[in-house]
Image 1 (cartoon, rainbow, N blue to C red):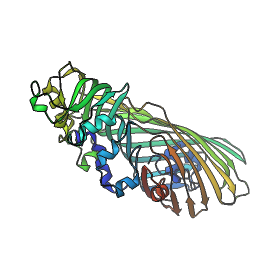
Image 2 (image 1 turned 60 degrees about the vertical axis):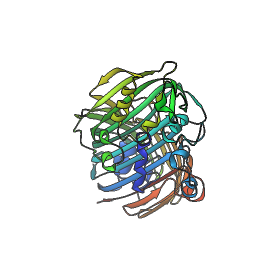
Image 3 (image 1 turned 90 degrees about the vertical axis):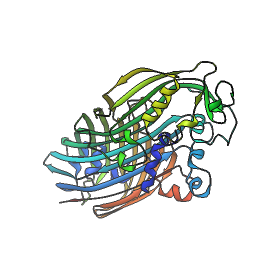
Image 4 (image 1 turned 90 degrees about the horizontal axis):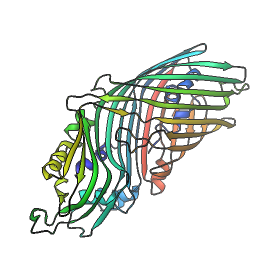
Length: 457
């Protein structure tokens, strides 16, 4: 099952390689639509009366096993690196495209219409022993691996599109202080989806040697005494395979089939001595992605199975190495006679990655600022119906003027740990990374890049 288990790695072929999107620029003093993505209440702080977003692209990849130096200095295959050791494997690939958007403000009110396309693909708490058994040549090892997990292991991928309608209003305004609130209502367009999971997985992985009862498995990787609750679900183009990048890009293919909302509040302590609409403190709190979408494609499938092997049973794991679709995996399991179909559904709902965001940007001296940003997920990633997201904390010192901005974000996230990057803005164009510096000077387990252009009038 090498290809299905590692299908999210196909996203790496884009050449853009972390986990907070637009790290640093999303709390820029030059307030724009990208700030409102973090908190819709920021719309009342737009630098210009009208704001047009042309295009913003952010691509993030992080993992807890493979370092950058391993990729360039080692001859070891990637699957051997990612499934090394005994710690469960976690990896996240996250693509966000903020498309054409328009916002404007009038007196105490502000409004926006936005578009977005998103891809999220994850390996979540996968047992390295199971991963090695499914991807490693059996001639490499003859050891017996005992697997005993009390959680849900997942490999999942989701692509969808969004159209957002935002409104914000100043609630309290004085010469020095301002409080605003905002909300974004999102129309969700599910594109494609895939999930494979094994909950409460137990078993022994070894090389087949039973020439009497299972001669067909001799020399192959086999599972014995296996137990698990399995889920296989797919919808849209991801049902056709994982090696074609285009299968991840049918963002709006499923039509309108979901709704979500973002809610936020913003506080600004204005700098009355500033001549460029400056502030001493800009802080906010928001809850984002409250909602779910329903996949209703013609090829929809969500099947739950029970794996309950008896003494003497063997499941040949080597046979899964070259399959390309989840349906092929299911067929092989059913042919083995070792699984029981418990439940099947045609349509299924998937929850968005809900998060709580808290931030504060403080003026230190003249044009120098420091921002603190916290992102806390509100749902567990192990749930089969949940699109995963990471917890992130970032501190960003920045130098910011009306036309130019440079910043260095220092972040820590729950998968890859500490990273630091660099970014800049010239007018409405910006480019950066939340991990470029650590990727260059240390053994970072995360890489990302983003760029975008917007203008106001």
